[in-house]
Structures are given as C-alpha cells and as structure tokens.
Image 1 (cartoon, helix red, strand yellow):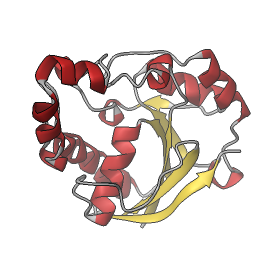
Image 2: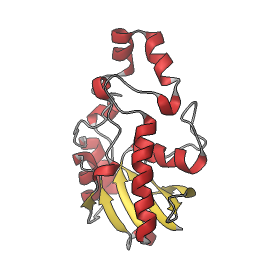
Image 3: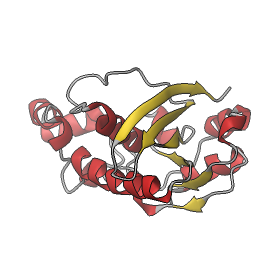
Image 4: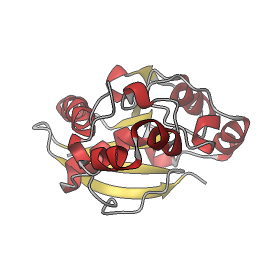
Length: 194
C-alpha cells in the first residue's frame, strides 16, 4: 500500500468566524500565516510527491511549509452551494432550525442548497486516492477538512453521522494508505506539525 499524507490548510478569517468556506477562495488570515510559518513537515514526508488544492488558502499553506506542489483539482473543498459564507446561526435564521438539523442528520447524504453532498466529495476523493495507489509513489497533499474527513470515511466506514471515530488535530499530518484497487486504510493520524 502507498502512503498518502494529508494536511489541512492553516486558518482563515472565515474559519475564525465559523463561516462555511467551501469553494470560496478565502486567503489565510494573519493568524493562519503565523501558525503555518511555525509548522514543520516531518522529514519522513520530504520525498513525497506533493500537491495542493487549487484554493489559495491551501497553496499559501504549502508555500509557507516549503513544499513544492502541483495543483490537484480533485482535492478542492466541498461545495457548500447557497450555504457558503454563512454561519450556522445565519442558516437557521434563513431556513429554520429543524430544516437545517434534519439535513445535517443525513451524514453522507446531507446536501446544502445547490451544493455537494459529503458522498459526492467522498466519491471524488476515492477516485483521486485510487490514482495515487496506481501511481505507486507516496503522495502528500495540502487540502481541506472536508477532504480529510472523506478519506477518513473511506478508510473506516464512518457515515458522517455523529462524531468521527477519531478526534482530528487539524495542525497535523494525517496519513492514509491506499492500494492500486483504491482500498483506503488509516496508517497514522495526528502526526504533529510542530
């Protein structure tokens, strides 16, 4: 099996405000830049073939980490449709508390208005991971929380209902393993970047 190391981008102002970013191209905040400047990718991952999401927050994080990355469109964040840019409180005010809660209880089949479902993201990521396994070269990616959660779902069978089976530290490297058939397993999670 081939290792695939995933790193979530550093924080943005929308992260701090708890706004759904999705595919909105939000830059890193000053605090996010300062955090990423302190992170260090462990040497064991230095020889990996690195790529980044096309969104600037991922590309800037990669640059601050000193990673030479290609751009990989398939590891872009989930598209939150009409929900992008809003907080949960704003969405509940607009659509109603119960309407928002009933959608989010659907796990993989949750779909925001005009957006992608987590299942859509998981299917997109599954294809990318399978290609990584077929290449047979260790891969690293600077990506997004939704993408890493999709990989965790593929590896563990988590349906995204309730809490994830493992607590994730978002200032870490999360390493999965994939074979040429596309089977995904957890190798190591929460490998510190500090």
